[in-house]
Image (tube, rainbow, N blue to C red):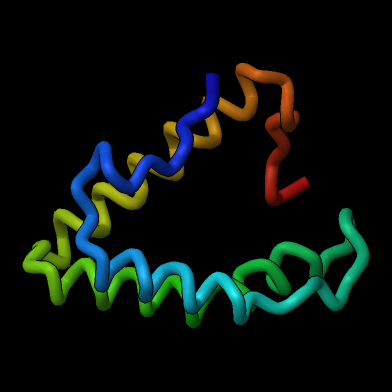
Length: 96
């Protein structure tokens, strides 16, 4: 089973939740077709502003910058492994 966001489980403050929700409404759609060289860059660009707001909210809540970075990497890795195990995606190389 994939990791799922559970705000109450992790005790995220209401202000933090509002920040995340408000940035989710501003994520842009892809400009390139899936599988094209620009598709992943479109995704990174679309998520950048929301990601920064998310990180800023976590820092404002008192989390250390290094610990935050490590935790986000671990969550992303755990989520990716879950999606692969569930057959939702296939692992591929960015260099391919």
